[in-house]
Structures are given as structure tokens and as C-alpha cells.
Image 1 (cartoon, rainbow, N blue to C red):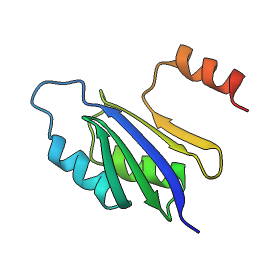
Image 2 (cartoon, rainbow, N blue to C red):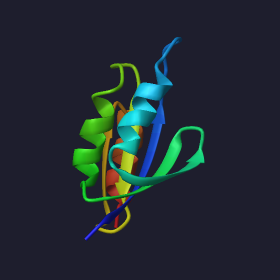
Image 3 (tube, one colour):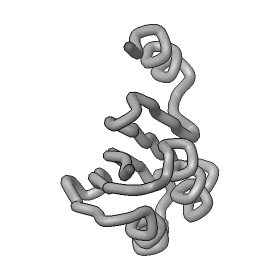
Image 4 (cartoon, one colour):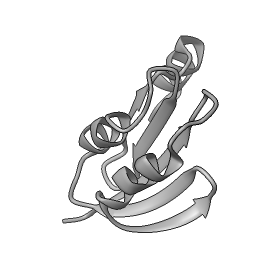
Length: 92
């Protein structure tokens, strides 16, 4: 069964390779670009697996946040700890 993934990212350093990150997102499955750095993807990957794949195309100063709307899970890299605590405390 395919998962409904929402992938959001920020490239925070000048001269970032957007095409590399977008290419990684497109490998996850069928996709639709909602905003400049926000995609919907139908995928066989979990949120954790998808975040790992996209993160591998990014720099350590960047951020990625992936939500699996099918299984109510999320995974992220380099999101502010205050925000991640807020999410974890309220996730239902």
C-alpha cells in the first residue's frame, strides 16, 4: 500500500543545489509540487526512509520534514529542538 507523504525542506546556505534535493524527492514515487519547497508524494517509503533519502542530498545546515499522512508518522532532520518538542507533545 502506498503512503501519502508530505515533504518540506529548506536549503539554508547560499549556492545550494536545489535540483539534487528535488531529484531525491522525485525518486520517492509519484509526486506533485505544491510550493517551491513542499511536495506531495505517493510512495512505498516510510516517513523515516524518505527523510533519509532526501537528507542524503542536503547539507548539514539544511532542514527536511516528512509527514506520512497514511500512517500518522513524521521524521525530520535539523528542525529546531523547540519545534520538535512542540510537535512531539501534541502529535495525536
